[in-house]
Amino acid sequence: MEDYRRGINASAYRRKITPTGTSRGIWQVKFPARIAFVTGGANGIGREIVKTLCQAGCRVAFCDTDTQAGTATAQATGSQFHPVDVADADALDSALCHVIKAWGGLDVIVNNVGIGNFKPLTESDITDFDRIIATNLRPVYVTARRMAIYRSSLPQLPELTGRIINISSTRAAMSEAGTEGYSASKGAVESLTHALMMSMAPLRVTVNCVAPGWINVDPNEKLRDADHEFHPSGRVGCAADVAQTVTWLCSPGADFINGEIIRVDGGVTRKMIYPS
Image 1 (cartoon, rainbow, N blue to C red):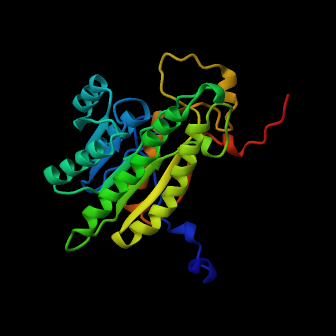
Image 2: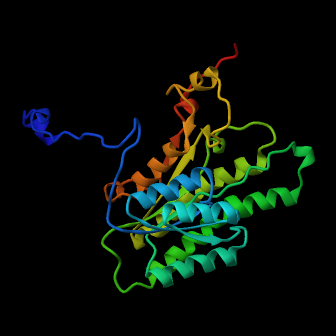
């Protein structure tokens, strides 16, 4: 802005940034080696996040209840698998402590795990609701608390800021019938994100949230032209769309992004929809 005020044409000397990668819509990034922990990393979006962070040079550990897929993901990506149910707060905290002790630190947490358990309100019960909250919401608190305890124990904070990235959903702001537990948990994740931002600020950790919309993680699912056309971006999302956003938020250049909710939904939540 100061250049424009002085009459300098910034476009004449601004360094041009050229995207890199092997396919359309995919960029590759390398940043200083960091230690990352991802919840729910065996399948779908979580697996893609694990893979992308590994490719970016991170040392990645993840947890999941699917031991077969978790083992396969670890072998394919060079990551470390912990067979943990995040609803077991003690087990989750223990896995984090193991990573910190074994690898000498913890720089990045991605709270990805989530369950839906959609059913009509009259057919659900408090057990269903509590299970969703224990899986989708409580682990965000558990992992952030462990990060805070670890960072507080350091004699000097690292030069690079830490990262906590929570995966929410566009259902935090828009719903269908039978999604009470899921929508409530994701709305709470978004609120917890900005609360944690303030608590983690003195420890030099940024806290952000990524809210995916329609993300297709099933290669066998048959998508219609109408499904793609429904999105202003012209297509249904894929796991890489979320993983690339998470990886960017982990990069050193994103340390001024804090307390934000970034929607990755092809523009659907901003689309005015009238009945046809």
